[in-house]
Amino acid sequence: MTTQARIYMACRELSDCVVLHPRFKEALTGIQQLVTQADVSGLPFGATVVGDSGSGKTTLMAALQRFVPAQDLLGERPSALCLSAQSCPTIGDLLGKLIRQLGFPAAIRGNRISDQSLNLIAALKDRNIKALFIQDFQHLYRGARDKSAAGITDWLKQLVEDAGVVIVLFGTPELGDLSHLNPQLHSRSPARYRLTRFERNDEWIAFLQGMALRCKSIDWAPIHQRYERELHIVSDGLLRPLKQVLTAAATIFIRDELQELNSGVFAAAHQMVFGTDSSVPNPFLGRAK
Image 1 (cartoon, helix red, strand yellow):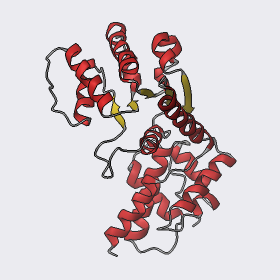
Image 2 (cartoon, helix red, strand yellow):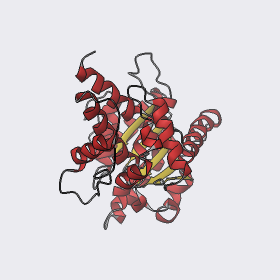
Image 3 (cartoon, rainbow, N blue to C red):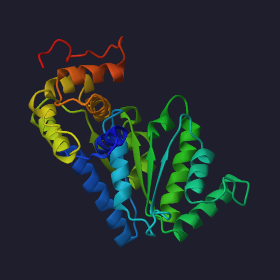
Image 4 (cartoon, rainbow, N blue to C red):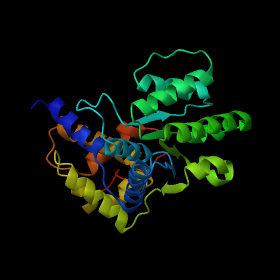
């Protein structure tokens, strides 16, 4: 296997690695039960997931999408759709993204939003879409957007009621509590889960152990045996910066044909990720290997 292929494999292992730590498992299991219950009862209700950027919301959404099986062996007809609410979203933005995911042209028959929405609802029912996951939902309530936010939430309520889909909303803490922002939408997505950053404790060490067990291309034991403190400092207990540093370390380790993961590898990985003039401290510098 070439060096580049080994680097790719090691980095993909880290990127795709999912460790079911307690808060992640609670949210994953709880939302899976909501999707299953809606399928049985015909009464869909969803959830909100709140967490800091980098806390694992995107990973959770991907895991949930895999839980809802596609309707064909090639995965070309998914039963769950994912989209992101871009900054200052409109109904048209969200509608267009859903239409494209369903494989239709960006503009379907009927120029008005109401006509397109009816066509979308019919398509969701015809394709037997069970769940809709919306990322970055905090953008909806950013700034003075009361009128447009109300229009979008009314539209989402229509999707729940007419298409029978479970809607799960993901956002940063800026999203707040949906029960205060929009009680009617909250009644249709009443469950709430929070993904928080790790404290430096036994749960953090257990998470690093889980990563080391699942990622086999490199011996990752040092991340929980020797460097858990330093990795907590550079990641601030968040998963995205942790994986960024680890993938950089994997690249350096394999590229330079090193024999062990030591402080020099992680110091160089820190510089690769954060640069030479970063406000993020490099705790690996000066540490004995």
